[in-house]
Amino acid sequence: MAGVVILRACLLLLLGTACTIAGAQSLPDPTRPPSAFAGVAGAGPASGMDSGSPVAAGPQLQSVIMRQGAKSRALISGEWFEQGQTRGDSRLVKITADRVEMRGPQGREILKLTPDVEKKLVTDRSGKKLQGTKL
Image (tube, rainbow, N blue to C red; front, side, top):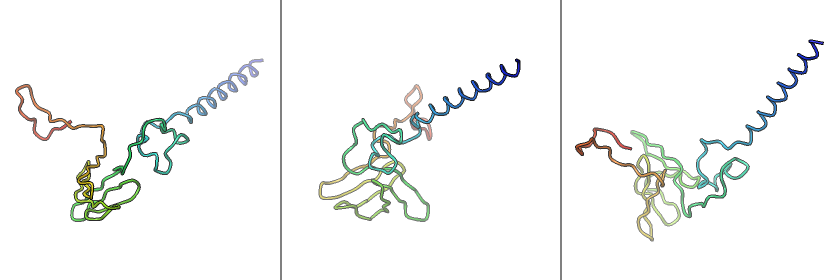
């Protein structure tokens, strides 16, 4: 009798664990980039990324690799570019850690890694800049 009760308790525990694991697979990954990368392979509803958000038009800066002693590279809309290379009618003229500058017939265009984030200078109460600190 006691063995049947223990067996049933183990089965219920296994069933509960299986249901929890199955439910966790449908949760979106909070570390995935925003849906602005909807054109990138793996983005979309099946990947857990929100496809209902508006997608920014034009090129998207996705990554920057800064190298000392070698050319830096920028991943723009799924393609790697070095400074001086062209993308369509625009030339990549500058690469920094968080943005690139493109120049073309339409003028200058700045692509940012995090376009919705603005850095602010951190100061103490007297208004003096704190050394090496940015937010």
